Image: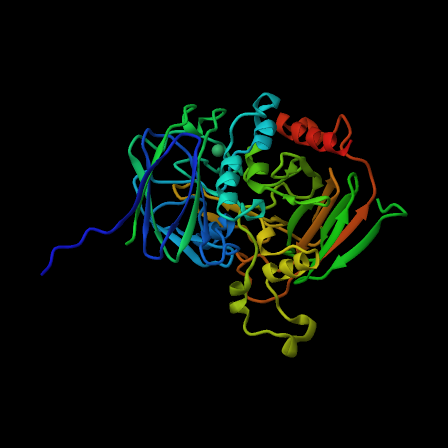
Amino acid sequence: MSAPVDPEVLFDVTVAAGDGWLGEIPAGGRLRIVDLHGNQAVDTLLYDARDTANRYSAVDTVRAQGSAYLTTGSVLRSVRLDPLATIVDDTCGRHDTLGGACAKESNVVRYGEHTRHQHACRSTFLRYAVAGGLEKRDLTHNINFFMNVPLTEAGGLTFEDGVSAPGKHVELRAERDILVLISNCPQVNNPCNGYDPTPVRLLGWAS
Amino acid sequence: MADASGYQHDVPGGAAWSLILRRGSTLRLAALGADAVASMLLYAADDRWERLNVPDTLKAQMSARIHPPMVLMSDMGRALASVTGSSSDWHDAITGHSVDADLARFGPSDYGRDRNGWRRSARSLLLDELYGHGLGERDLHATVNWFVKVRPGGDERGTLGYVPGHTAAGDWVCLRAEQDLLVVFATAPHPLDPAARWRPAGVRAVVAPGDPAPADDPSRAFRAESARALAAAERSAR
Ligand SMILES: [Zn+2]
């Protein structure tokens, strides 16, 4: 009987506050996102690495699982309902996929003209997407790991803090070769980052 | 309301349609039967990479549903359309529309067997329309599902509950374009509708010319966020 072999580490990177990341996870590989300092929204998009039009779909994912929040067991599906990844571990407990990403333009709508030139996730998404051969059309409604956006039975929606904490993590298993596009959210106008955006750690394993 | 220069078109159930709706014009949709659905995509007509963004629309107006007098917002922070009125205060935008796999329970269907009764998913119908405008799968986004109600539970997972019987014949919603729009919608049944039989209801569309949101418009007064999205659309129309 041989000792178990440690899975091959693909990467171990820290994404600075307000920065982004684009990388590939092979089928069967895993990605762990660690909320190093707590209450940090990590805006995330997934693509079939071999056919990027087959991309993450928030509404198809939510409908297929019959519930609004993501946690362990949630299958993150594409527009064609293909499983792109599964959440296999989650010490936070719940993640949003209906609140979308911040953008300069939506910041102006939400908070006023004075926020127009603040940094925003959509710009980060685009910067990393374009470098990877994608473009604006390829952006869609994302996942917000570690973000708490409660829906109410009366049809309300709010942004709240409070579910994540320093060191909490979420882990995905790739169900096919996937591209992962991340914006470590720089939003300072609501509690999604505790009004203080901080770094996160990304750990990738081949299995 | 049908001005001499307006027009009316009935879209049968299980079909799709698209139209250009000019800034200020209104589009009134009325259910022609129970459980009608219009799953709608919206694009700015002169920059079709600017499109409806449901998350931005919902979070800016603190709502998990679409209702009057909310403003439907683009990813560029501009109003695309205002919901000027409706017989319902709940239209779904968070559970998408049917894909081909959702048709399996109705049994086999194809053109040879069913001719124009061929059962198609909302997705394939929407894509057919998008292709006709030079758009495609990469241009899909969360649809507003007019006449559909799916209620999130207050539980830990946010369990979603489809509300049957939410829509009857004659129920309606009216939109006003706040910029020139490409409007695309499909009338296939919602995939969470448990009805055993395929009997999709149609939707009557009435288009009428008009003016964009006036200064005292209820959508402008609804929330500061709604007013700012309308102002952004006005600024770019100058
Ligand atoms: Zn952000």
